[in-house]
Length: 192
Image 1 (spheres, rainbow, N blue to C red):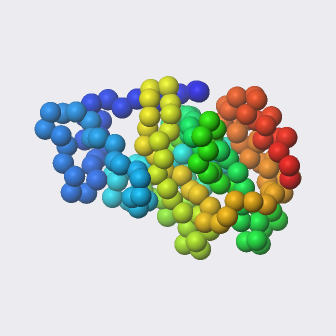
Image 2: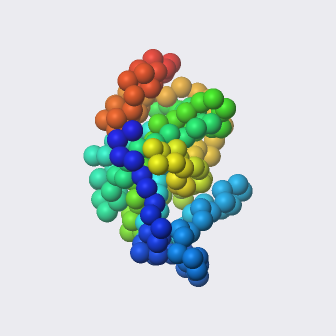
């Protein structure tokens, strides 16, 4: 992992709190929100929200065009998840990347601080309004511990094969983000 993440006490109050939320009186950091079954984060989370990219958006150059105000913060792992593909019937040249829960599996991610002005363009790019992808909260494991973040997951059943071009783009993006060599090679060996 390239850049470890840390959260210092009081950092949340300097960045801004969710609308209506109050900082703990003892000055400790805001507790991480619960994830199970809660709706996707919205722009009321504060000035920046943490996005975990796992496919083509691992490529920081690509993300700088899609979300120009949203810097790369570091990398991490989604433990208990695996990268897979689905939605082949949606009309693209093959299946699209998504993640599913899977014990003993991991997905390499790049973490971006998404500025509010980039959230709408990211949602449009990922097809949230078209019900192709949706946001979901996850916990990302970094050198400094767990970080709450959100990901885009496909609104379709798992299954189908990605195109060779798309799979190559995902593997290239993982390599450019600093994913371990064996992780990148596993991507390159996947059927397409």
